[in-house]
Image (cartoon, rainbow, N blue to C red):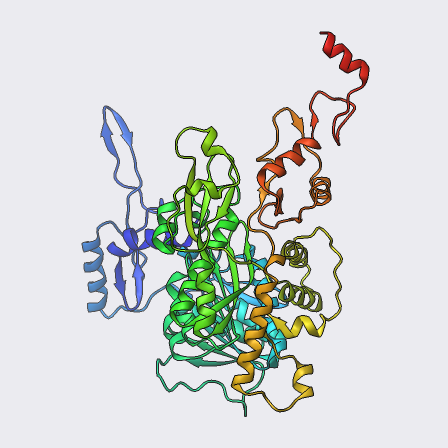
Length: 585
């Protein structure tokens, strides 16, 4: 059923004992072309099929390989080297053409399994590709043109979508270290009527695409190791999507990325990130994690912590723009801020997490290096006092800062509407509500305001309106003052950040009680004075700043007993007769 199994079968069985002649290979045949001599056992006659070879010259069937070699030599000695059969050339491997977002890609068989093909293409990652495209489209509105890199091209589908829709706003470079993948990328570029510039040299004085004669529809295809090309060249946008973890490429990605550029990475090692292989997470990310109700957000914060440490080693800080953890992948998009001060601020947001194993309450450890006498006092719950033994574990180190940037997400939603990406719009709307920690879903498809465009991620972003107002670029000192002022303003608004982690309403439901509908429960929590929203990490998750005790109190208050037939929602109110009868009994 699989091409790789057939190839292995041919190599191990047929090709090892084949006979070659003038470029042709005569393999052993097990079909019923030749019947072996009958065997007489207990007055019964048995006939079996014998393995044999077919002579390509005279079509004779010969059983032994040595006899077949001698038979071919006799033909050669007689000058009989022409075959009586017309042999057609071997057909090329059947390729399938897939279409996504008006982009055609040619893929090989078994394209959905990375171990079995060179051109890996996963249709389930379409949502991931659309999110990355929206992030790149937002960056393309800030400055043009931008140099972007798809470090692991495979079929080249992502880079082709960038070049086809953004055109002159981007200069796309698609890289892959596999020669077959590079060939497939070139064919896909021609299939989409894109010009290709191939470069496989690993030279320090590398010359990119010039601004003169190069067309906007030109894609540069390179065959290098991802670490090598990121060390040699500088980019404004880098996307990393290796098979598995991406920690091996983070140092190279942050070495030459430009200031205020964007680095996005997709991690598909969900077995380790989702705490199914905890020892692998400790080995790759240096992080201790366990399976919790908020394990998807735990995975996202684990990846961001590794990103922040790699950026800090290059004297760069990060601002998280988007963190998405779904069934098949964890996507993190960060903006790079150059300088030791942003790097120090980013590293300070990496903390350990105290997690209660009984009630699953959690809280980040306080800042500082002093050892506390009783770390359990930091937890809001009292499980340590009421339960025997050690009830909590320390997880991390994890990223403790915000996972989203509301202004950037709204601009991504605007770009998704502009380019007609319907599948990603519901997810972006949910993430915007999650970033603001609100249940309202009133979104405008008009262009975002200039204020949201100008100040973002603790720095000022230049917009076309700002560039038109002043042709003189401010000096370095003025830029630094603007960055410091914006950073101070951001620190004062930290209270507006979304709460960390979420609660699963099913995990904390009361036995024998019917829970209220999720949307109504969100309203109940909001009426109690807490910030609340849904989360994309868990369809039944509630992100709120309410402690777990208050969360359970509100849930208990608005739950109904299962035996109350007439009441399905809202609190239970008993009549006086029922109360008196219960008291009498």
